[in-house]
Image (tube, rainbow, N blue to C red; front, side, top):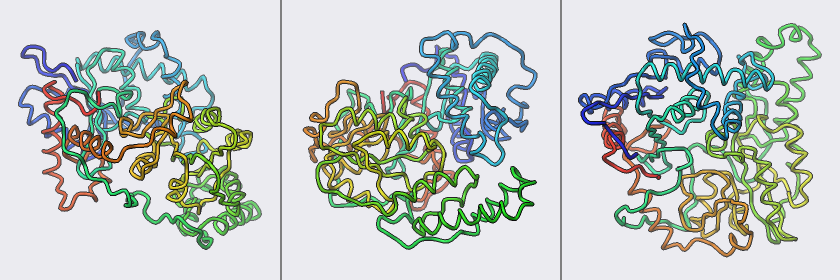
Length: 495
């Protein structure tokens, strides 16, 4: 960020913080600022000014100042947002983020259906937020993660249109380290002109084991059985969405038979309905079963495309147009010379979201594409590939660690590292194959990256990586890092 206070006037801060740990860091920040920062608008949980998730769930849960839309009328203050070039793309992002709460992807979905209802809701919310932000007098906005949900995406879009200074922070895979940036598109672009840092040692023979992939095997396993959690999700579905049909024993028995067939055909570690069940999901998993006994032929030249979980920040916010992962595979296919295949592996945690029949039909129309079974080893696929491709996934980081080039289609933290190629229309297959990472240069670049990070945990799931983690100490450390960033006294990690 390039500007802090104007004269002696304190920063008027708008913040999106929805978790207890980031709220603690936010309050510590205001205390440490000692009058240089005033929190004027907070979207978060029920003890914030406004309940952030209420706008995507479309319920009436209130914060300390009521509901975000309560008592508002058309103000026209978002007109600049609606008139700016590329507005259609902003609405597309909004619809993508809001759609995750639609039928059939949530037990308690919002009532919107149809493209134009989403469009109208975007206009209403943007106008409301523009009015709330203007009334608050906010000059700066702070996000504790890359905006990728309805509330934070709208705050980000409207705040930029209103000219607010922006600071986004997000957790890294490195223990007790987070990164900062002034805009989403800056993600991965290291701030130039920083002092040279010591190299970060990287063991090429080490296979990374990410905690969020715990329990997922990389080899064939016995089929599973319907879990108790899945039965509970089925019961919730019937109670909330099919109450009358639940009285039909043939309908319920048919659902159970299809569930049993899916569980038996997929490896035991895969529990497809443990978190959510909808009858439309059955078709997706039945389609996956078609590939489970397919060949794993790694002979000959190929590019490994690792599908990413959706809906998630890594595609919805960081993918741009390539949140449509089929589009990325189509773009890759256009680059490839004859005889080079694309081996595609689905994310092992994926559900039916964005994986309808037309998605698979698009992939089936690409002659180079071969869909891998779930038990195909991602490590072996990487090791024998010409290069690895993804939207922004950690598989690219794993590839360059092993000396393989990586192709990314979106924004990602490792974009500036040696051996990483970001897609653009003029990029060629030969340029990627001919541009593997130099290991010494990679270690130097990662050291430079980490030197531009900040100490602390802003994503609570990453506390497991910090021995002896303490909430209070962490809140103080995060606040201590944020203060100079907001005041313009320290550079962000990414430019």
